[in-house]
Length: 293
Image 1: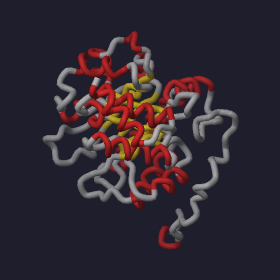
Image 2: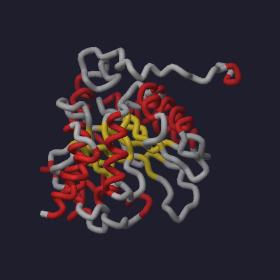
Image 3: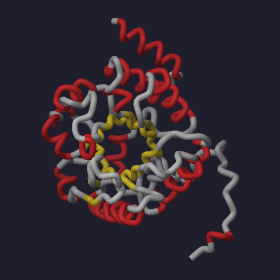
């Protein structure tokens, strides 16, 4: 085992250089995965831009009914045409989303305590690989708790999901959770976003922070940025723009879309930034103009 006391803090992330191992497939680090997994990744990351817009609505698995998501059957289908990936639980997708929607599915497969429990970090895998296949999942999402009491268990969940997914060509997305005792610093995210792909995650979902270019450079797989707490629309679009400009391969937004004053206008504005190279100011102007109509 390496002596951690003798390790030097990394300095040179070569942020001016593209990822070296391209191999003819446009999704970062995925040149050597098999055909089925590439096909699923191509459903997630659009070939034209190489990016993705995910719509997160998996909040109910631990929060119950969430503001803006009281009626999944009404809210989510109206937004689906403007996104690339539905990020939800199997129960929500099966009961509320028409199969004819045709969107990629990021299936939440980890589950744990509700918000009534102070410690949410002890999750288990609650969905079998066979059901992920039945759901036609494009990837499986596993929450990981680096630096929390449940770190070891959550990484075990991740590794077992990666192994199961490899048998069927389904990628795994490692989701970086930030507990109450953990600071959202670049040092923490550099650690978390490196651990997950080293253990086999094909996609990493994390938060935007300072030194984000260094984080995306050091991570050998695509990083998707979580929307996090509800922000004013202009601030959310600025965060989205900075993340994409600094190397993110997409966003997975929930509250910043479905709790917006105009969710459809907001998701269209986000899509402009992610897929059309629009600036945050251009996207916000579009949001305001579209909202007026």
